[in-house]
Length: 76
Image (cartoon, rainbow, N blue to C red; front, side, top):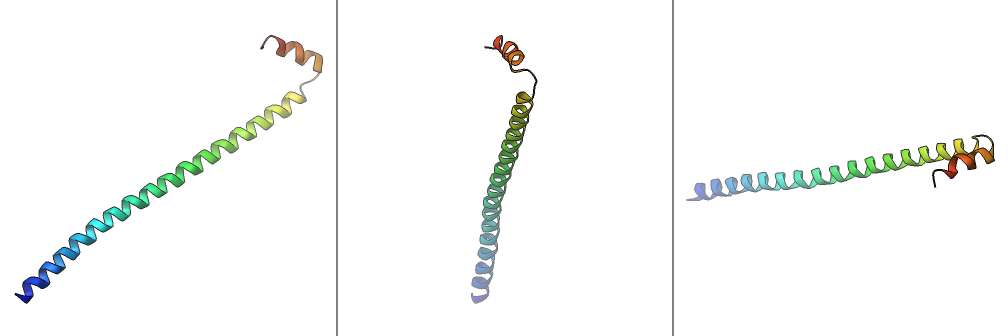
């Protein structure tokens, strides 16, 4: 009877370990996915900011202000 209880406890421990391992892996996977999404969003934001700065810099140095106004007038 004692051997049966030992085997039962060992089997339950093994099953519990597998279930706990899968749950832990799922939680870690979600965390990693969230970190990757945040990092991708940050990189995208940085890219947009850099492109905006380049556009502003190029727009301010685009030549005659009167000509820029005439060119932009049709866009409104």
